Length: 130
Image (cartoon, rainbow, N blue to C red):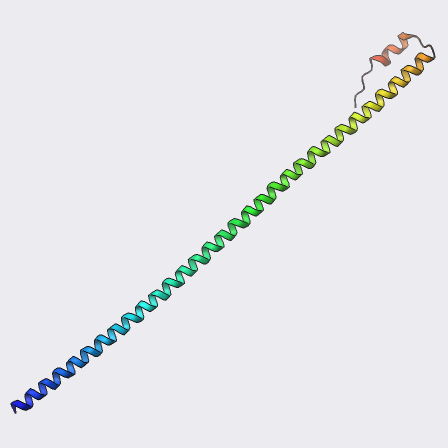
């Protein structure tokens, strides 16, 4: 009977040890699953953060390009305005030159007809304003 009790306790002890080993294996497997899941989640978070940073950088680059284009357009508009102003100034100078030439021709013509100087004085004093 003692032998049977000894054998039963030994069998019970072996079963308990086997059960503890299985529980330990199950716990290890569960731990590894959690580790793998956390790694996948971390990798996904890193990818999402990288994608967000890429979008932010892309948006920043687009804004920089837009600012550069706007700046270049403003410079071109300024150059066009200055060029237009120069054209207008040149045209006015040309018109003034033509008027001065006509004035001189008229004075020469009047002098050639022996018109007295007192009648020419107003014409001589006249400034050409364009």
